[in-house]
Amino acid sequence: MAGRTGPYALLLLAQCAVGAAAIFARYALTGAGPLAVSAGRLTIAAIVLLIYGAVLHFTNKAPFGHGRLRSEILLAVAGLALAVHFAGWIWSLEYTTVAVSTLLVSSTPVWTALYDGVVLGRRLTPLAVSGFVGGGIGLAMLVGFDRTTPPHPGHTWVGVALALVGALAIAAYFILVRD
Image (tube, rainbow, N blue to C red; front, top):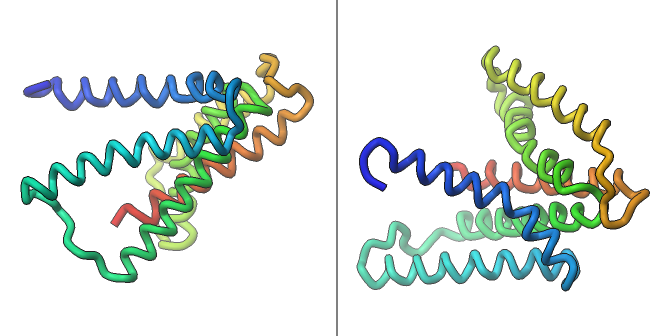
């Protein structure tokens, strides 16, 4: 992946991985509960990051030294938010469709923008506002008109609520780690 196409190829690969994640999670739910699936997913990611960190450490390219207590607490809270994100999102797949769950949990930019506007006083650009309005219309259409049967019918709003918890938790994670 060299030159100008490298970042686009990486973005395409990441999008395919994110897009397929809900399908794999739904499949994993046939053999384990939502918290076990979430823990398994985070464990796999942690192993990959530990290997990467060890390679950086032993090649003396580690970007971080010993952290301050405030940074370590912040990262621990961010890790908890990430765990809540995965637990809420994967648990939502038990009660709503993959499409609705994935769409709602991907509403993170809305929540981070609301935080930036309300807490930090930042203004949204007109393009961002129009994007959010268009996304909101699409979200309402999908949530309101999706007729796919979830694994536990009759509890769709539980799944919707859990997916929104997942979206808010990952928004909190991104806000905590963005600096």
